[in-house]
Amino acid sequence: MSIGDAKAAARVIDAMRRGWPVRIEGVDGALRLLNVEGAGAGDLLAFGAHGLLLSAERAATLKLTNQAAAASGPVAIILPAGDAPAHARAIADPTLDMAQPMKGPFQSMALTARAAASAAVDLARIGHRLPAWYIAADGDAPVDACATAQDIAAFVAADTLQLVTRARLPVSVADRAEIIGFRSPADGQDHVALVVGQPDDSVPVVRLHSECLTGDIFGSLKCDCGPQLGAALRTMADASWGVLLYLRQEGRGIGLINKMRAYMLQDQGFDTVDANLRLGFPVEARDFAIAAQMLHLLHIAAVRLLTNNPEKVAALAAEGVAVVERLPLALPTNPHNARYLATKRDRTGHQL
Image (tube, rainbow, N blue to C red):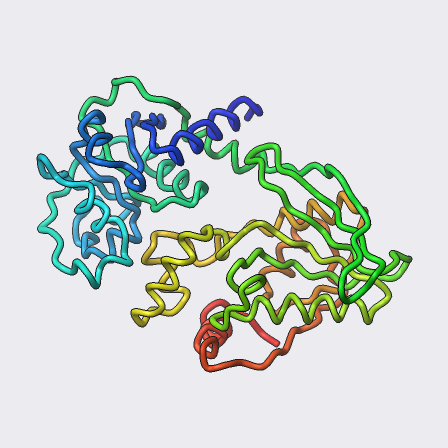
């Protein structure tokens, strides 16, 4: 795959985020699509929607999996003539299920371009939008961007970081620290590393910390991210040296807005795993290979990893970074995050 392929996917992601129609082509056909989020009545009228494409996970929530098409991926349903955007949004967004419980009956729609449909669901997830799309009756009408399923796969594969800049940054736990900035040419996302202390020949203490606005900044009690960040920095300050890799992968990779939707679902009684699935996202959407790239660019081949997550150990090892020791992070619970931490232990394999 060429870098041009990845750029085509990036243009489609940008168009999707702006509420513009796109075309996605697969080996078995093409689809002209408009993401449900941000599409108003005027947009729909100009677009000429006649169907709604939903992820398999959302289809299961809506009890569409008894239809044959739901068994192997995304599902398409016919959109009633004159249907309002609010109704389609309620079909697509599980956080509205309590407010608008009565949906359907649904009539399935033949979906021949299954490769394009699967790529569209992946594209929405990459762009942190609900994996739900309007399907146009006229698939050949003009669009603002076009990509193939192979382009979208190339976009994911092209996520190669570049070390961009670095600067001295005294922090509360250590006045000798350096912040180092990285950028992904594929999606333009920035990640940073904070090197605490003076690097030497010893194996550094390393923490892979995914961005958490609510926990890191606002002190949310629903998770343990803020306390883990503070504890990790203190552990590095007490060691010879350490590296905090701050990954811009909010909400386990589903994005800030979708994380807030997951919070709404948790308030309705779903745990964090089921909330992600009902939104149409995988339980774990983060890319820990990015952290391995950062370590390679910092010429760090072995680490003492601060984590309770075995997936992080396996991901670094798969990318050629030796984890010589796993250092658990044991922190007290509170009434607001006890279930969340139990879910991480029981359903995603976290361990002390």
